[in-house]
Length: 77
Picture 1: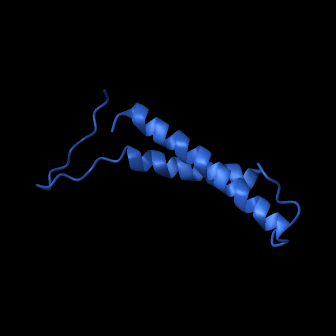
Picture 2 (picture 1 turned 135 degrees about the vertical axis):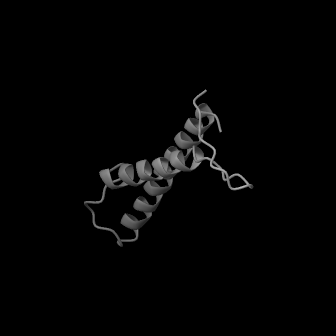
């Protein structure tokens, strides 16, 4: 997969993850299931969204296995 496409997928995963985590945080605060100190757009939400984006980046750039068992190296370009 080209790096540009992988970067777009990673950015989309970060944005979607952040929106989802903010919605869950808002729901948790309104339902009195989360502490009041857990703010929207807080460190926890950004940290988890960045972790999701990092996982997506590694997954998008992973070299797929070759059927005959030979190892194929990834080349830039």
